[in-house]
Image (cartoon, rainbow, N blue to C red; front, side):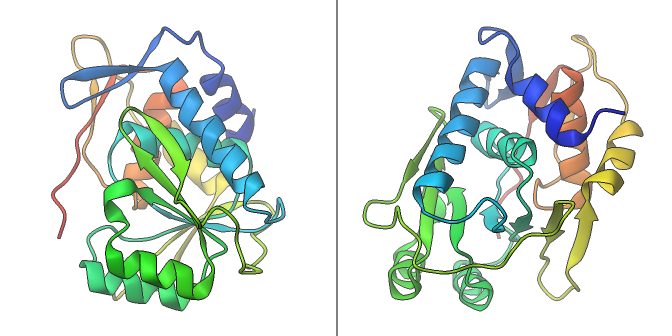
Length: 222
């Protein structure tokens, strides 16, 4: 069976004009998702970290985050997911404890307190928006943090406030994806589970990798 990295690469190479996912009343194309995935890849390379270093990712249920997720899986990065339901001060504390070499998050998640922490520690920061695009936070394009090596084979590590860290290897994730139902133009898959959890990741990757019609629904923040 083809692995998740290979399937993600195939998905991101679909015809650029083909529809990928709906969000907030707009259809996002595969060309737009591929652009974000490639930008994230380049920005991580530009940060100076090695190919086997894990990255921290604070995903919201938005096309840019779905694209970044696909790109990170394609590139076989170990991903350490942060729970977006944490309050802002709790998020800053979580990042301070984790001390990642690179952080990826929506542009509006980089609060003044978070930016101050990034500068203090030397964490490289990649911001996402729904143009969609990915860009480096000015002055924080290069990482000064050595970072930890990711798992081999790669995995997704899920951090939930008050819960033990959940490890999700690619082969386990592939089994979750295989069990997901397909969507149709008349009944697209509703991606309402948070992308920061196992169910949300499996739902989103299943729909995107299978090329199923899908709509992203962004849950309210804490």
